[in-house]
Picture (cartoon, rainbow, N blue to C red):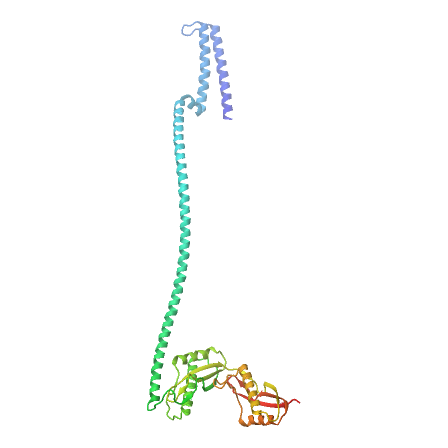
Length: 387
């Protein structure tokens, strides 16, 4: 809108000035006016020229007053051209700097990529190092645990060594007491055979360690008394020898049986000659019910004739019963491998009964009372003819 208004103003001003100039020229021509002594014709021409100059001047003046661009074009073109040249120079300089900056940027990007790769590799190395550190910490912890276990083992072995040394000293003292005034040789009278049961006791479950140790100590003491009685020694001295380590292990095993009765057997550790300390071992077994009273144990069908050795028939039958009971869980005597007991009269009653029979007979054995693993198995034996 500003340009349109300006053009309209210029048209109007040009027309007005042309009109005025035409009127002045006509007047000058009609009146034959003269300027500077010139002829009227020349004066008219000068008026027309002045009118054109005024039109152009007014046009430029209006444009200059209304438009800064026109003023710049009229009066500041050289400065504008200079500014353009300077701008182009600066632009070229900036472009060069920009290109240089781009090159630097590319170099920086390349270096950044290298740094990033190095950073990632460093992170990987750090992760690997951390993993190695964790592995080393695990190894360290394992070694520390192993060291602790070894320290505990060393302490245990040291304690066991002290116990063994004390046992050796006690054994030496005991041997000296037994040998005092007694001359014996290794081939002397054997008073206990290896594995022979000295005492066989059923004990209840006790959940207190001190009470368990006291109970085992009492059993060992009673076994020592039995040995003194067997040796006809009236003096109350220690003839039974059991290492402290074995005693402690027996106490631990007794607790591991859980809430069950246990069979405690003290047996001879070897053949014991008169005058030697009686070296023993403690054997522990869980005790449980094997047979109830009148439970069937074993039966056998045999053929007999008058004149046969009835006693051998009964002995063979009882041997089979014995193996059956052992297989069932009754603890046998370590020397004789027997589990039962029978009076002589009961045995010979069975023998006499069989001697009078002829043909096939069935011999059956039943539990005479309730029987646990500790035994003994008392039998009721019945003989029945089958023909």
